[in-house]
Length: 379
Image (cartoon, rainbow, N blue to C red):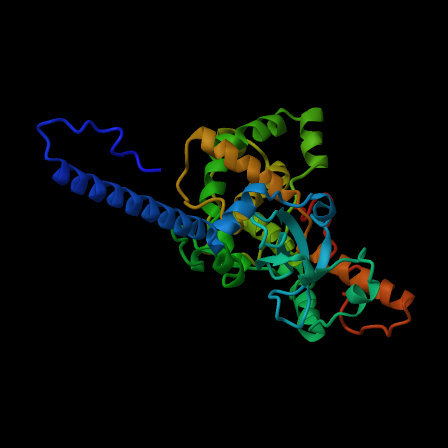
């Protein structure tokens, strides 16, 4: 209804009535046009509000991610997994994390670590476990058995006996700071080159200048039950393949005690430690290297391989303690060699139960490359 009418305006003697009515009629006409324009704009505004993006936004407002219960059980499981959805071949891997969807169009996803230390984010339909309802999928999915067999053989056998293992540390490439990204560090550099990045930390540990190591050194030096507790529960090699772990142990021993083997290069110079370390006899130094230095060194290696240590510079005591704790946690992870062997042995048993033919040249020979639970090397 118009706000203006002849009845709610006083004519007044001074106002020309004809001109007044003409002006009033124009005012009413303009007001009706404005109302129609408002209605049109309101209609178009409603249409714009319900476009696809806003509909999606409105759905998201009421959407909740699915319960993680049915997915979280996959975390920690050894699996056979495709590296890409369109790939045909499956590879040994381990599920390390569940990533819930953040919108309705997204699937639940998982982070997986493959046997060759590559990582990927995949959906659930990219991998099989031994516990899937369809057991045949895990038992009979396609694998590149030749490549897998080559990897297991290469990571389970040392070319030389321990006593014949020799290396000239002066010929190792100088470490770069910042260190390479994990993918390059692991896949493009040999364990000897990786070892070069750990040497600066071992030098500080021997001289007592690396704060996170001081506690374990103090306990070992005190002897008795404190030392026995360290000896009986050594730091392990985390995801390192068994051959890598064994070789790394040899490298630490050869670097710290170069004269313990007559075949050691004459160019090698024994690193010097602080007074407490130098007061140990040769046998005690050997035990210290196995019980303490090896574990502290592998913690640094695992931090580099995981991309957690992004500089070779020593950080504050607080930051170094936090990094050290992460590295210690990484050292408790299962060896990649064990993961691969577990998957392949499980697959073989399942194939036999399902009446499928045995796969040849995939599972490593029993006893090859088994990781020692206690010491990886002795002096």
